[in-house]
Length: 152
Image 1 (cartoon, rainbow, N blue to C red):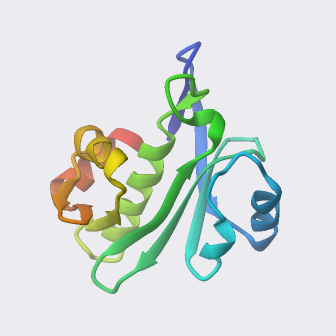
Image 2 (tube, rainbow, N blue to C red; image 1 turned 45 degrees about the vertical axis):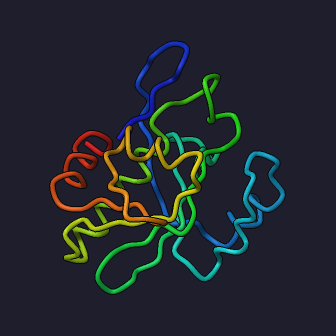
């Protein structure tokens, strides 16, 4: 999996790993994230980093619903949001990772998230999520395509 440096367009190898308790303490003190990630301590949280770098660039909190994966919270660090972001593909890699977990659990790639209205359109247009009222979801072929596009 890779991220793209926005200015140079260079591909940089990235990795996703489970967040450890010590990482939560670093996130808590960080001014790089808007959400209070301590609220996610009871969920499974993953971070994305560049290979050989300790700096967390994005986070995703997931919940296993028994037949699908729910994204409880997803966030890129502040320097990776908007038109002046440093690295591209952070959210796509994290979303695709959730799809991969769904397939591993035999949930057919079914992943849902509750989206705020101002970014809902972004998930639909960029990642082909389907609108189901207050939730968005992906499954099947679209989830496979996300995995191919972002993880391999």
